[in-house]
Amino acid sequence: MNGPHLLYLSRADVEAVGLGMREIIDAVEKAFVEKGQGRAEMPPKPGIHTAPDSFIHAMPAYLPGIGAAGIKWISGYPNNPKRGLPYISGLLILNDPETGFPTAVMDATWITGMRTGAATAVAAKYLARTSARTLGILACGVQGRTNLLALREVCANLETVLAYDVVPANQQAYVEEMGARTRLNTVGVSRPHEAVVAADIVVTSGPILKDPNPIIQPKWFKEGALGVALDYDSYWKPEAMAVADKFCTDDIPQLNYYRSLGYFKNIPGIHADLAEIVSGAKPGRESDSERCFAMHLGLAIEDMATARLVLSRAKEKGLGTALPL
Image 1 (tube, rainbow, N blue to C red):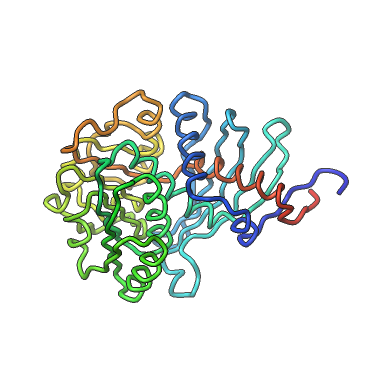
Image 2 (image 1 turned 180 degrees about the vertical axis):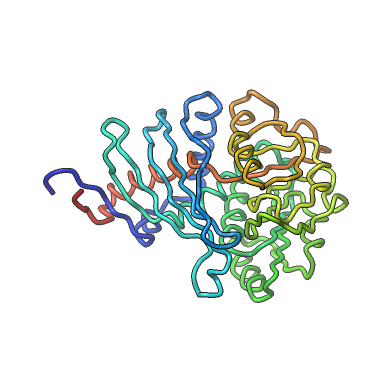
């Protein structure tokens, strides 16, 4: 094709690339190293909100160390499942760092799910006990699945998954699917308390709510556990977060930006962001008795690092459709 063009990758193309979770974890960890060493450009994500508790966010980032530059335009609509549509949808654009020209447009749904799980795995590598055996999953959707797949890569002793969802059918489907897929002892529980109180790692991934009514209480968060919130503070009571010995996030400027919009009304002081921990600037877990907490907002550097791999592999395999600019 003559003249400038870009490669369009549908969701089917993105999945057909065949990236493994371990590759994505490694790419996301490298992105956090780059950020921790001051080699990333990533402004807080602006957004628009067309319905209650919905969002459409613009997420730009540049990682010069790996030649990844671009933007993700991503939405989350909690009523979509009632319409037979996924909660999350979006597109991702990669640009040539030297010319600024778009080089690819790809579906962002699969990338979002996988890189979010990978970020949790990176956090667990530094903040979870190496002896962690039990994982609590609250919300059995896409993130419940990708987070389990990612944590299985870094938690060598993981044996049991305690799964809870407000929709019993979703919970049962998760138990059957993920038990067979991971060969871990995957058990559905009838109350959120059961998925938290015995867990060494707890991951919550319900809808993000501006005015939440959280249910996880301080006494549920056991000594030595790691809590990971992908749904802001929608599941965790402020008092439960406050018992953490180390409260961390993936990006402090972004968290403060969302505070200015009315989110995170009552959270503890921040020990570090994940990039500081991964790059060695601040310590992660220092004892088996510490309670650690990771508040993950989702970062564009994770998307760009993953999308760069997707594009490279798609070209190798001849996937996608070339479109003129």
